[in-house]
Each structure stands twice: as structure tokens, then as C-alpha cells.
Length: 159
Image 1: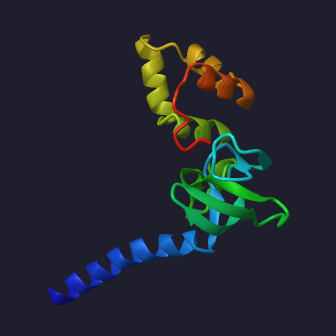
Image 2: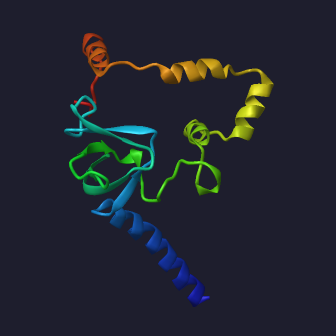
């Protein structure tokens, strides 16, 4: 019984310590379709570059919900992104058994797989054309910022 408890404790410690080490100078991977690296931790900070899904990054530092990272492919590309955009596990978007297809990655981002989406489509209660159209809409940061200021909305930690 003691051996089982010790093994369990080691597994729990490993599960906690290994991701923490990856977040402190280790390699992590972009887990969002595309991320924009910012000059600071604010949502409206200027852009320093973009990285695509699966790109390897080195974490330079963590500040709350933000991580300063440098691209492993090109050390000149660095900046801040939300920690939620990163994964300690290597992520791959491809085809066949090597990884998920781009369509599967998009479905997973919505919380679905193809079978679940097909079931909802056949039910007829949801219009996925509207969802897909909504996802393609882009609002420039300047317009979004002006909307927030004019509406006297809180910027939160977005400054």
C-alpha cells in the first residue's frame, strides 16, 4: 500500500513540476490557430509578429496570465502572449496519423469533433453557416479600442 501511495505522490509531483519547468525557460508550443506577439502584456499593445499553430517557443518569463516568448525558429521574433495560447505538449496540425487535420483543429477549438458536429447539423437546430461567418469577421484593434473608450467600458488589464 505504501508503494502505491509513493508512486501516486511521485506522479502527482511530476505532473505539477514538469509543466512548471516548461513555463520557466523551457520549450512550449502555440496551441491557437495564430497568435500575435505583443510588445507588452496589454491587449492593445503593438504587434511584434505572428506565430502559427504548433510553432515552438522558448518562454522567457511569466507575468500573471501573460508569457514573454521567443520563437524557436527565428530568435528575432519575440513578444508577449496569453499563457492560454501555449501548450507544454507538442501540438501538430497535419494529415494522416502524424496529427490532426486543420479542419479537426478548428472543430476542436469549437469544442467539437466531426461526429458531434454532424449530429448537431442533422438535428437542424443550429446554423453552422452563421457560426462560420461570425468566425471570419475581424475588427481592427483601433475600432475595438475606440468602441470601448466611447462606451466608457472598462479596459481591465487590456491597456
